[in-house]
Picture 1 (cartoon, rainbow, N blue to C red):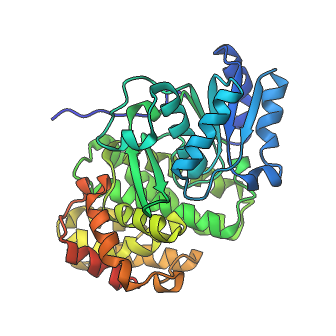
Picture 2: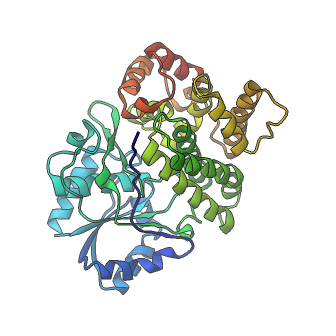
Length: 383
């Protein structure tokens, strides 16, 4: 069976990598950027790291800073309007997954027309490359800066859906760990657990390949060894660097192998309750892993080893449980081991969310097929 592997043609990595961006953009003869970000990054001045670099290379820009934590269809429409008003010829996202996903939607629709929802009905459905997109990452979690995924919220019907399109891949991605030093502890924890979930789900995906396997396992190792340190001491450069590589490797894995029920269920929690995506993943990952381990036990033993568990004197069942317990322990250590009920989730919405989760594109590559009742039971187990 053949497979396809997508990733950006160029990624600038490491401390102060953003300082190499201006010269790269100048060589591409791009004139005016629409910067897509959120208001917090503007208010705290972190955006100045980007705008100063653009100014030093005489690259003009306009800023759209209305992106919500769960980016909406309206965010994309508003960004498109500003893009046209300001005559921008390329897009730069600055932030975490929310900014990247909104920017992807803006760049894709600007080139192809229609509405972002049009591109959610199938995979790789756009006809034309999006406007040139540059993604600058300030978190170590979503890997949206380099994937073919964008997750969009339809506020009208409380749904959150993935758009999967090969044209989402940016021309340049930037992972500068210095931009991540000031991340608050909870955001570091939630995005880190999101990255761990990407790696675990990609490793057990039905679309996994040796390339995605290698990326996923190394990502699990890096995240398990460095997330707690990055949460405890955000200025630990070694841990921050390791986390940016871990989340990028996880992105390489899931962008090409896709995901599973953790993400399809977390998308519904985000759509209905507007919850933090990484936190939802952290809560659901152990329970979905126990469900999936029935279908792919050997792979969950590999995950246990990558989590640092010595499985040499364990049965397969013991190793699997020890690996999942290690995930739970890490989540507890960084503060994401919470209950859905504590976040306002109620039983009356579970059937609605479960049905939408089964219809979510991420469910297609889950290694074990679930019934509606089984998805509801997984939700209930985490209430």
